[in-house]
Image (cartoon, rainbow, N blue to C red; front, side, top):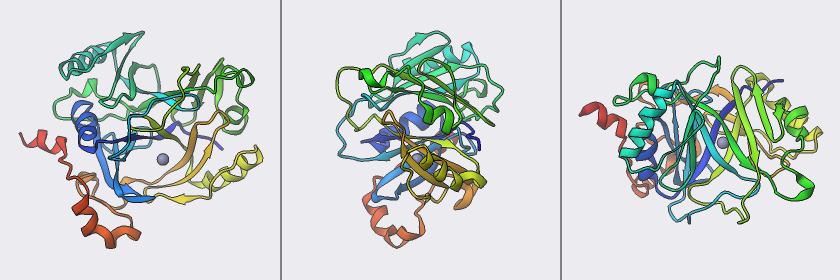
Length: 312
Ligand code: ZN
């Protein structure tokens, strides 16, 4: 059994319009699905990604319009890292983000900044044989586009008994991560991904706007169900297999507190709309289709900045 890198990363926003503006217009990701939170259909669940909505490129947001600003603390993911193709791309992004009023901090072969709600992001030049998952946009040169996720960093629990640097055997023995260094993990399946722990800040974390809800790792369709048994054997408490319309999911909390999901590559985002027109219409799962009139009236209309850029 093998995991093939990141499937998707899910975060929280209090502002769907500002979120689409930043991720689709500024960062040039494609809005590949506009649907609702399947557990609370009054709010959006927005999916961004590359042109095809490929696993490894997918960033999703639950919109909770009343959510207070959150902050990452122990047991939470605190930074997302995308790949770009070159140092020239970092220069392009520094300029583009700067022109939007975003403060950009250069680090080795990477730049760091935050989204409008404070979520920490990084673009990095990464040597990899992975196929680039390119997010094409009309006003972003293709060679500078985001190329999919490299991975995330999380805060460890920060107490002496649970040293962030100790090997987490759920990650290594059960899930197949390599451990190239203290607190550093790497998946090397059909795609690679990095996962690392940093010491947590003193302040307690708060789940809220601008924080990460969970990360999903990509498994293989035929192996999905078997992961439940494997995780249970390791002392984890995986959920049943849940149908998320675009993939099947299993959730569990890794020992340091971060919510993990394993998600299948199939059936993908083209199951309920034309691949040419992903994300343009509100899609509802069958159990909520009868609520469409009410939901469409209640949800804030979202213009698609990519469609507008293409028209102008
Ligand atoms: Zn998920």
